[in-house]
Length: 121
Image 1: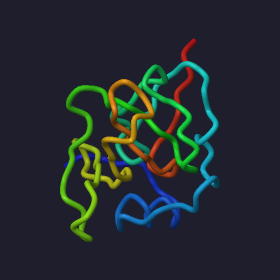
Image 2: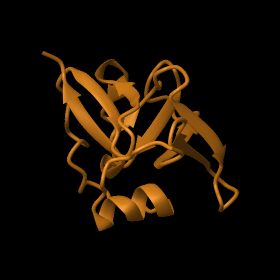
Image 3: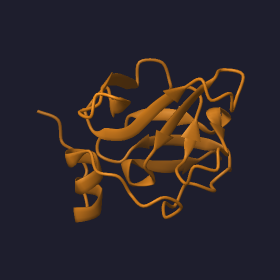
Image 4: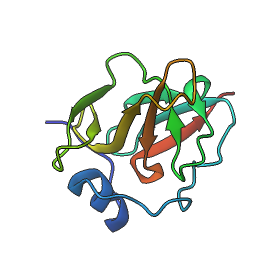
């Protein structure tokens, strides 16, 4: 059995219960230093800063995950695609396509509470 990091009640709400933090409230929405974003629950590397962009949606946005790190499943509401950590199954947010924010035409809309940022040295 894997040992996971301790979570605050707010982090548990998002990661374990597929909750959502309020827009523009997350610590990483305007974070643009070089580094890597990891799963807050299990430390799996999810995204690099090279894939992060400013979408104006109120949550950190990425146009590509680290290969094999994120799984995509139909959301409970049936209209969106949920993204989860491929290692621990923690809820990250949702993925959208066709918005033309980047040439990859994909936006991973991720809760800051689902991630930790590790700055490059």
